[in-house]
Amino acid sequence: MHNADLKQRIHTRSGPPTPDDLDELLARRRSSHYFLAHPLAIAAFGRQCTARSLYPDVTESGGAKVMAWRGVPILPCDKIPVTDRGLTSILVMRTGTEKQGVVGLRSTGLADEYEPGLSVRFTGIDDKAVISYLVTTYHSAAVLVPDALGVLESVEVG
Image (cartoon, rainbow, N blue to C red; front, side, top):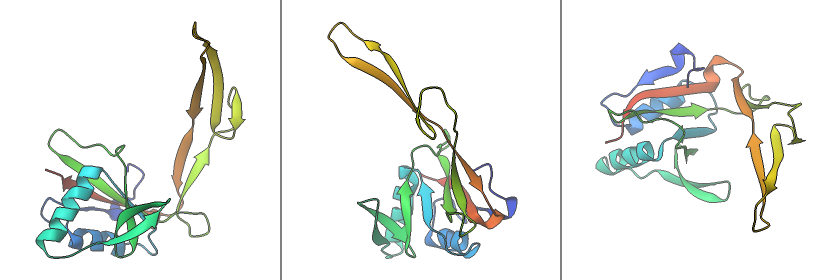
């Protein structure tokens, strides 16, 4: 969220996320691939759609059926914080290097590296003969061009 260009950050019109807010977020970039939102923000968007007698699409993503807006899947992400005042953000992104979008980066050369970005470390065997491992993954993201990532800020979820 902090890597989003200031011109790609917008505020909600009225507090809860409305279809108009998500339309404006989509209009600021070409070929968006995903929305990311806290589950409470997705529920708040659903309530706004219901109040307007609109019904978001349903699409499949990763083998699961998810809500979509204008064909763009809205994926739940509980890593997006919700403040004590009940505010959060909704992100929209285009992904991939060929589309000049957001790309994932993996660290290499890790101790006990199993594959790039994945470390598996043996931590011992307990008295019941249970083997334990510490599995750690390291990822970062890079925004290749400013319009690859957009943020709807000050989204009320309550």
